[in-house]
Image 1 (tube, rainbow, N blue to C red):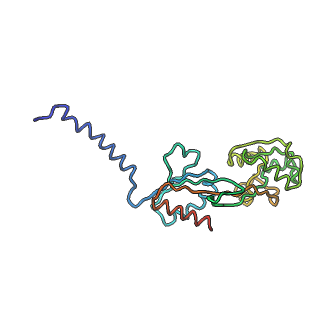
Image 2 (spheres, rainbow, N blue to C red):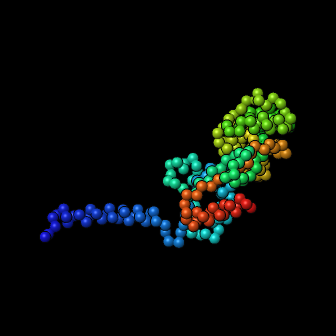
Image 3 (cartoon, rainbow, N blue to C red):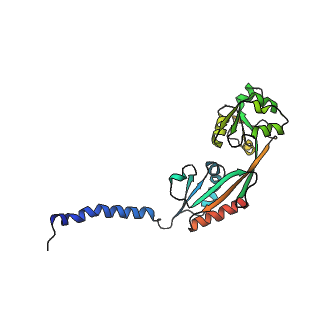
Length: 231
């Protein structure tokens, strides 16, 4: 029995569908000799901890690829292989791994030091103070440790991002309390730390890792991360 004209055209209609399905299959399957993992963490943890160390993990793994996803955009993505929750706490829970103790000290643009003649900690009372919304007692504690009173009445600029805190100080908006380790950096010549010996402990940065994937590369990253934290 011969095919109708519609039947003869049927394979032609199926061909682009089959081609599309084949392409989709190739997209989700890993290529030979390659592996990839997706990692979700905060922008701060990526920029200050993972990024400087990641080449050591990739060394010896030429076919591995790592996708870094900030926790701010992770909700719009599929489930990651590894999720790193980081934060700051004075009493980390037992499930959290301590990373580094945070000591903060004032930083401000050099032009503000000249404009307000900042020579002693008390001179900062004349400078607008920038603070993070989650650490609004930082300045009071720092001034208290420096033996200076009256800081509660000083005008404040409040931000909700660590990057905004640093950027505001760099722009000359005021003085910001930043990690004392920044004082050793040489790539920010305009951001000065006038009292680097006067620091205040605000907590310990910690991480907890949730591993979603059971792949070999995911396990290898978890083991490497543990070694880096121990070292």
